[in-house]
Picture 1 (cartoon, rainbow, N blue to C red):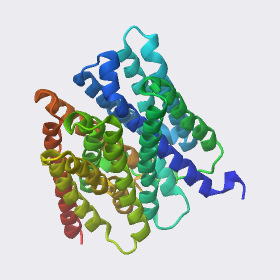
Picture 2: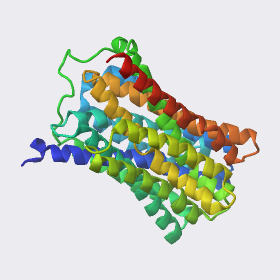
Picture 3: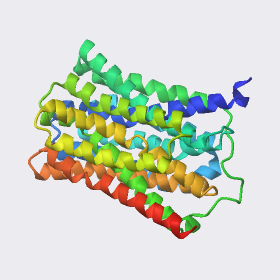
Length: 396
């Protein structure tokens, strides 16, 4: 079957899209300590890099509600990967070309954040529109590729830094940029179906007037915050807070986090017909609270690293599970719904790590204090699931 008629190629391109998203979100955090030592960038400005990434993604989510349906998913996917490649290339070039290295990093982060935001908006509805069965399983499997991409980024980057030297990190940025370049070409060839027929999707006003929408929005905010508050700071937490080497910290912190997060998503994709999604999400929320407690209060480093890793297992189903529940509850939500939920998720992705950085900065750089504050997000996630259950009972 030709590539333009085979939706398996569409799924493959979507998987690569989430690997691109993983590169965008996980490569820079591996260099936080390097930026502090090489460029003299203090912790508050390092925090700003995280915040800018997700604020720009958030703004892109808002803008996407206006233009994605007009230009189509294919054009949007190509533009997204173009910006991602430009930002990753800029990381290696702009800090040296501009008078202020920090300004170069800010511009590069803003560029790839546009790509990351668009990818988050369009990939899930593209998969939802594909003529395939078991949508919840397909969505969970799709999001697992973000995790495998994160592992891919951490492992290959760590091997590169050990073999070639951390001083050559710019070359690694250029190599990572090749993936969005290749996937941009791939997306120009694959078939893409419409999620909702023209004129049948709900308007933004209709969505905002629905109680269910706000409950799902809360779940999305807490999903993004619970995940990113830990994953974005795991490497720095392991190095500065748990006093382990960078190599050990990267492998046992963000790498193991991503492996367990992906495993959780693959598990649900494999057993979705036997496991109730809502119960699986509730158990995950409870485990997330336990994992944060372990990371913050562990008396020895190995238990702290175990807490970081368990957090990955716990947050795995939160984001794709919320998408699946929302798609089933609002089948005519269309692109606007996915864009607004991506907006809510990115708001959480901004709020979670920013809260960790802010609180830690106030506590003389003690990251355990910031992670303790971030426990509010998995608690609110459980509250959201209770509200969702109550809403269903009221509508029976």
